Structure formats: structure tokens, C-alpha cells
Image 1 (tube, rainbow, N blue to C red):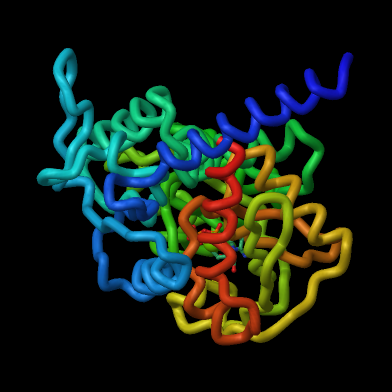
Image 2 (image 1 turned 180 degrees about the vertical axis):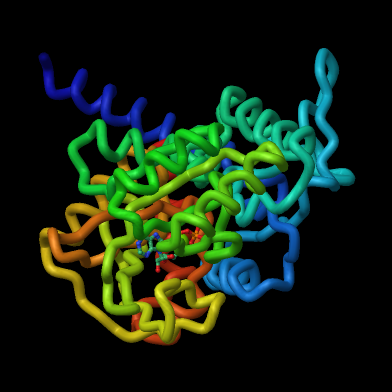
Length: 323
Ligand SMILES: Nc1ncnc2c1ncn2[C@@H]1O[C@H](COP(=O)(O)OP(=O)(O)O)[C@@H](O)[C@H]1O
Ligand SMILES: [Mg+2]
């Protein structure tokens, strides 16, 4: 190939990169990134907005109930006058929020549609679905050889009682879609187990039972962005639940290579770009109890020098360049 031909190809490629980058910018020349959040003044959303402004990116915050979706006419999704696809370059999902089954499914449907139409969504909707469902997430982690606790799931209170004994008579019962430690209970008495299982089943709950991992009232939260752990902490509690939202204290910690790899691999298996991975250090080694696709980081930020919102926005921008 002649030198002039090589130069021409390089020129064409550079022009198309510049065009794509220009297309990503709104009419006024600034890049706009959406944050779908139930509270735009929440701490994490505010941090993200500040991180964007530092980089000359304009944030557009809105909540799911403000979205209007259209089929067979355009815009396919809008928020007030904003055309989500045309005006925004990417969308960051902060908590999907509480809602009826219909509301949650509709929210996920919109995210899937936007993604199919070519929008960068962080986290991708499939990853949000996989991680929100603790059974689904754990099966994927196990299938990829990652360490997880012995867990059983059933709709039957009778089967659950058998499992209670199988799991050593000391278990944690969790809601399949729970978060912040809410609704999780540790049970070591068969009579209480029987009663709890019947009650959960009466209200059509699914029984998600896990062996209790003795962890000395602390665990690890690894915050993964892309393919690296950007920050981590020990969460030290006074009880067996180590959620910061329940009062556990964040303590700085630097993970070894092995734990970092574990957290990054788990994030990749679920398909998240940003994740909070919860790891318990049990007698048989570390186990992943869950992976959060919309982790908060206020507690973690208090014990790390790294500005986590900056890292997230830098990551979004780098992904946009490659999108
Ligand atoms: N199998 C377990 N054994 C011991 N402690 C557990 C177990 N599972 C969860 N925990 C404790 O409960 C907390 C909450 O559980 P988790 O599975 O992370 O659900 P979520 O945070 O979504 O409510 C964990 O951070 C951990 O401290
Ligand atoms: Mg958790």
C-alpha cells in the first residue's frame, strides 16, 4: 500500500471519529448526559452532576415517571421538551426505585428500548435485572466459578424447612429483590423457621435461604468501575448485617490482587460497568453475597481519596469515545 493511501485512510478515520464526537454533542456544543434518578438532589446524584460540570458536560436529571415513551412516532422517549435519544449522549441509572411490578417492568422496557436504539446506558438494563434478582445473580456467579454461599430457593415452606437443616440450621432468609439489609433475617430455631417460611409463603414470597457465613460483623464492599476496583472499604457493624444504611461504619481497606480480581470478574459476569460487590470473609475463604448494580458511595467516599463520581464520569466519557 502506498504512503498516500495509508495517509488517506488515517484521514478518513480521524474525520469519522470527529464526526461521531460532534454528533454526541448537543446543538449548543456541550455534551449532555442524563441521570435517571428518583431524587436529583440526592447525595450521589449531586456528586455526579458536579463531576459532569467540571468536565463541561451538561447533566439532565429526571425521574422515570417524567418519561414519555412513544411507539410508531417520535421522539421514542422524551422528558418535557428533551428528546432522550437525540439530546443525550448517555444515560446513567441511579436507583430504578420502588414501584409496582408494572412500573418496574415499564422502566426496564424503556431502558432496553433506548439501548436497542443505540444509547449508552450505565448500567445496562440486562445487568440491572440480573443483579436485582439475588438468585439469578448468584447462579451466574456460580456458573462462572466464583465463590458464593450455599443457597436454596423455593416457593414451598415444607421444602424450605428441609433446607434449613441441610444448610446447618443457621441461615439467613432474604427477600429475592431486597436491598440495604431490609427484610433479611437470621434464623437458627426450627420453630421460628417454620413460622417465618409459612408467613412468607402465605404472602406469595419466594424463600431465598442461605447458609450463615460467620464473618465477625464486618465485610468488604468493592466498588468496581469498568475493569478495576477504584475503591474499597471494610464495613464494620455491631450485628451480622453490615449495611452502611443500617449503621455499619466504613473503614478504609486496600484489597489484595485476588479479591480485586474476584470483584472485577463478578462485575463482568453480571454485565455491570459500575458495581458494588459485597464480599464476606468466611472460614473457607471469601464469598460474594451480592452484587449491586446501583450502589451508593457516600460511606465509601468518606474513607477514600479517590473521587468516585469523577471516576464514574471519566468512565462514561471514555466509553462514549469508544461507543
Ligand atoms: N449468608 C450470610 N451470612 C452472613 N451474613 C450475611 C449473609 N448474607 C448477607 N449477610 C449480611 O447481610 C448484609 C445484607 O445482605 P445482602 O445479601 O448484601 O443483601 P442487601 O444488602 O441487598 O440487603 C450483608 O452485607 C452481610 O453483612
Ligand atoms: Mg448488600
